[in-house]
Image (tube, rainbow, N blue to C red; front, side):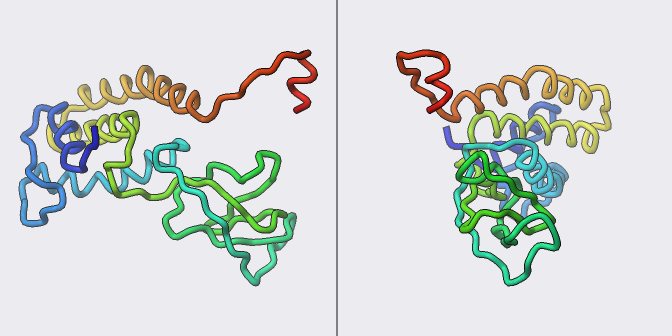
Length: 191
């Protein structure tokens, strides 16, 4: 199922027993619920995207080197994409890099990366990402709309203890499948 920002907000509002909104993107909707959702959603989205290498929104990029040389340790500096939120890795896992602010320093040329962008299109979100968003939003709404720290803390505990470990395991399991061939254990790891 493709989710929208409105549906994510309404799921969070439902968790805290608040009224639903008609359209997240409609600035004319001035209900307290709509205003709180529009206030919290952008920062929560960025925070959740920063917290995990979400493959559902991952993007590849070939970066262009800057004219500035890194001050130490690496030969090249690259400007990260404007929508960059989190680094997933480079095209070869053995390549070393450091992120300094909005720049990537590495010895690789060209720099081919995979990263998590600030993806605003909710239809691209996996069910796990949607759930992380509405549980985090529910936490904030429980505090701001209901002034109910007990409800907020229960949502936070559920998120941290039960839901996040399952989502991270499921997402990591889908990162790739290695086909094992017949042979010795040493041969398999020398490939």
